[in-house]
Structure formats: structure tokens, C-alpha cells
Length: 94
Image 1: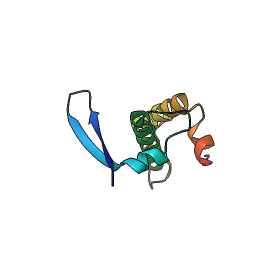
Image 2: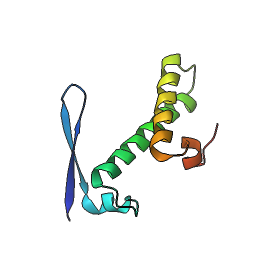
Image 3: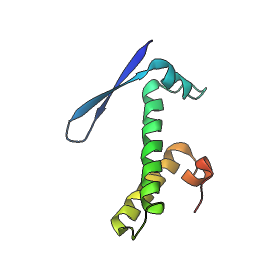
Image 4: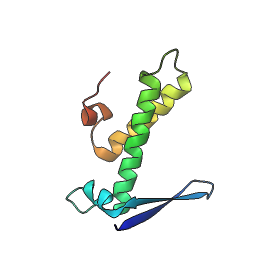
């Protein structure tokens, strides 16, 4: 099976490689010819938004104000990238 490897680099220059089946990346590509890197970037932002939302809204106990600010910033980035809110995209509103 064909694979595609993507390199993620953090602001400090550390890198990590992620290898995925090439067909998986193609499966999530939009018909407007998104690059494979853009598809992976989209999925990364979606995953982080989903995780941030879960931490803030679906855990027991008091949520730290900093976590709420992080979630809000992540959801703003989500809306900027995808042109819709996280709630609109997922059908999950609070």
C-alpha cells in the first residue's frame, strides 16, 4: 500500500514524521484540489479543536480559565480556516 510521510516542525525546530496510507489522505481531500499537506493540516486542527472542546466541556470538575482561553483561541482558528464555527461543522453546540 502506498504511504505518505509528513514532517511536523514545532517553533523550536523539533520535528516528528507521521506516515499515513496515501489513500487516507486522498479520502479527506476536498474536490478543489487541496494539497496533501493542507489536508493533513486541516485534520490536525480539527483534532486539536475536538480535544480542546472535550477538555473544557466534557470533563468533571472546575475548568481552568487558561484552558477556556486556549479552547476559545483554537475555535477562532478553526472558524478562520474552515469558514464556519466548530458547532456548525460538528452539529455539537453548547
